[in-house]
Image 1: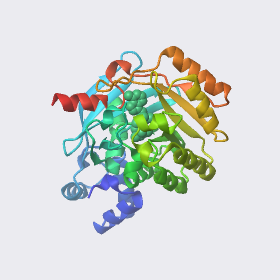
Image 2: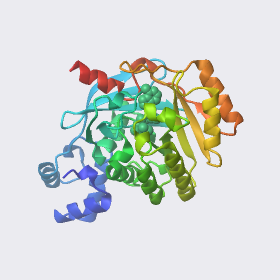
Image 3: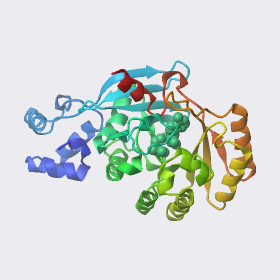
Length: 341
Ligand code: SAH
């Protein structure tokens, strides 16, 4: 058992079973959520309790395999090694509104999107809640920068690891832990419709980001295999239900791929299909992945696409690219490292 997977009430049960008073649970919880690597660091605990905890519940923590800092914008990318030797990536981005970490939710991914480096080797395993929490904790510890925002947009499909991701959210949001507000968290999905409905039921105040990337099934089928399972109309309907349930505007991600999904006609089709759905489009110039023939759209095509959407009443922003000099996107660092070894 890993104590970092436990909520405070659950941890209190464990601590009680060791014959300890409840306030000890709070102490242990807050140390664990500060990113300590050993019980020795829990200086306000009696030595015998630290020893017992250490014997029964060794603290697991990731180690830094690679750390790359962008000279242009201060973006820092970490490649972490987990206890079983697997690696995942985390990116720290400095925005004017706060330091944001982009975390991974799985080792690899089984969704098979044509443009994405994370899926090339398939899914290795899902991350446990504490392994997601650790990415936030140890990025904060290592960088010395306080983290206020989280995006679940790293390696993996968060809704394909639903229960662990829900638990992670509860942990990172807890007042005695990092206390990161749900409104500062974005969860990105390729569009697992039943899970979007399940998420809607939780009525969390997080931002749901949906990787749409195409205006219709004809195009989406060719770049996102998940579309064959949950076609775009079902996905858009699920987004409407999500909005009904949560009153949270949907954020759509749209990777701009030259000659594939970036025409004016494509933008107009999107406007028609989004009618009446409060949403926002994030246009992402495609990051080129070595193994893929897909190319980014030209700057002109992106600008024209954005203007068409905006003229049609859909707010659209072009995502600023950060960390372009350090492979800071979408599983590229892990991919290089795994290939090299
Ligand atoms: N599995 C989730 C979250 C991880 S991917 C999802 O699909 O949303 C985070 C975002 O990066 C997604 O929108 C994904 O489609 C996008 N992405 C992946 N590879 C990309 C690339 N090469 N260029 C631009 N965006 C990419």
